[in-house]
Image 1 (cartoon, rainbow, N blue to C red):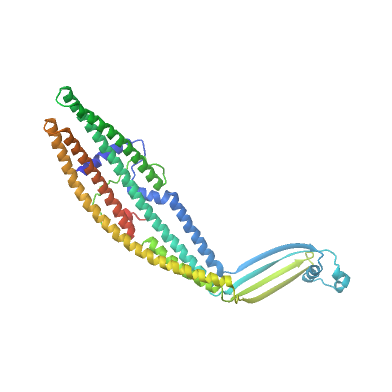
Image 2: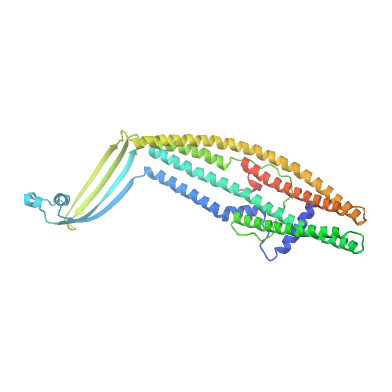
Length: 437
């Protein structure tokens, strides 16, 4: 009943304040807005695009390479001058004159070439690099998915943290109004000589304390709404929040799926293994095919043409830097595998912790609902007895303090219930608040 009344009051206040402000924002809408508008997640998506382009580049290493070259030259360097004439197919007997060979006249030429290179065997480097690129791309996708879930949990915390602060502000105004009413009553009794002036002064001091507390709660509300706006990428949220703090139905466990960060750890380990294979391939021979054609002109009609085809083998029989890179890649693969194991162990710990926290929050919520009913009844009785002169003011103030404590416990237990439910969903891989991308 208390929570239903709380929701009614919150709804009326937020509706009145939001008529000229933003439309009501649901929790699901806030999560989706964060996924689409938050700059941090946009940066994460850019990393996914980068990994995809990187994987595409690695996959293209098996395709042939076509190189086109155009050139123009003028020289009197003896060897180049003779070679240019030879490539132009215009060598004559006079070109073998020692004087012409040693001191040729400047010669000009223009032409070009086209060369196609095709790797045939690379020691497994290209295949391993392609697989590593694909694994890293998939790992970045999984990481981005987990980043979205972490953002969703943060939105849950900020969303309900805002509601907790705003409800605390409503109750603080209730307390201040109650103190003002009590001040009027005690002031009248003091004027009649039925109460001491000290009791009125005590109420004024408590009133001042309540004003200071309200200022702090107002700051918390502003901070919470600003934080929610940061997560959703919209700036401070001004409109009412449509999803109530108290669950409208029992929070059933979500359908668990594979966590994005665990999938990323598995894929990163696979990528590191492929990276070690690529490094190992640098110690093996490579075979390549090259086909080309060239032309060199003295004039448009006076030219020489040629073609060539070659198969070559290259093998670094010994390279200390390459061997060091192999050892480094193997160490990196081992580190990735150990991190993969640790991530899985950490996830199991997070599930156990989230389950225990959720059970504790549920128990605290049940106790809080009972305590707030008892605190309200105790305050009502003590206040009635105080008006009859049967109970000192300190007892009434103690009852009000107890009620404030019970209210704070109720808000904290509801907040813990929602965020621990979100933490369990994150730990098990279930959609947070049922929201899926």
